[in-house]
Image 1 (tube, rainbow, N blue to C red):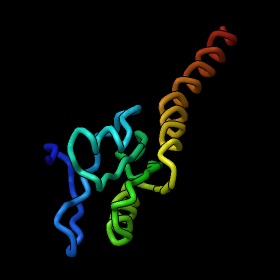
Image 2: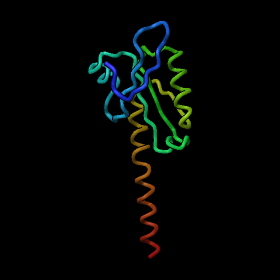
Image 3: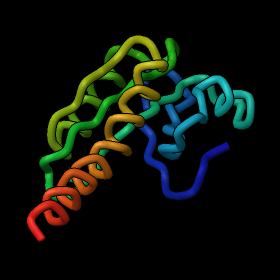
Length: 118
């Protein structure tokens, strides 16, 4: 099953392309595999500055993604800024917490500074 709007990287020696899931926090690669039947999965956690090629994307992939495909994913993600591959998918959840919560903490600090100055 191929999800609309998602790219795939074909390995010339294999017929099944990896299919990256949408960046849902909490959706594991095993959940995605169970729902789609695809065993080659790349899961990413980009942050907002990726839209201006200054982002940081943490990513992991299933064991079935070949080294060649991993290199292609790394090259693609590098076009969005920095990229960092992690072996354990749990680190993606940690990256989600930091990437998602970090801007909120900065805004809270700025708000406190404004309130203290008035």
